[in-house]
Length: 293
Image (cartoon, rainbow, N blue to C red; front, side, top):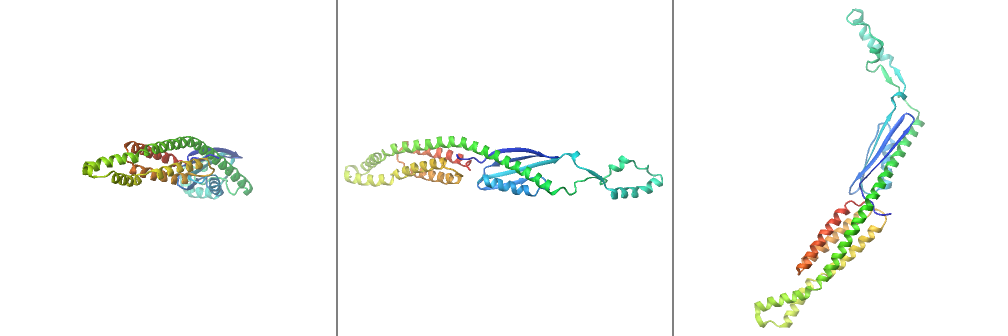
């Protein structure tokens, strides 16, 4: 399994009896896994299904699951609330008897608040359980769609990250070639400076000793070796299974630490320029790593 991204969208629709619904799952980048759920009232088990489904599929990202469900209006029976109707009649009777109001009509009475009620009283528990299970299945399908979208993003990220790693490896090799010329450049620079200050009094032996000490301090072979090792480690992570975003992020910090040290030790303008290119590429790599699960 290739790496996965953290952004995507999935949707699934369903229907059962008088009910129809749509489940949507979407996610964005997140340091940890955070699941949010919005659903219709009366379906208490759906939030659990959404959370468990997301936890089974993802390790990082802010995942939002939403369900919209509706019941066909004609499907539900209605009933007349006789108690409410009698209260309205009792309240209006004195007005009708004294001629201050016309006798009420049937349609007028039925339009009064609370007279006509949808008979949604207790539904069959087995039917409700089947309905909730069907909606939960749609949530799972939406999460599968989200998973596919995140993996598609991961495929695109893999190509970008691999290209950036190739560039880092190329710049590291170039820095190694350029760094090979540092000892001679340091010696020549130090020798010119010493002869400028001390003339012929300075000996060749002294120049060699001092230049060698300076070259040791400017030696970047250790940093280059570590950079090469980090490149191989990153390639291994990109080829592995599971969520590797955190480890890649940590590795990127190590990349930048070595590149900074290389630049600080550089005694050649060409090596410094390569080091700056290296830092810029590492920063681009870091930005893309933030999208990896």
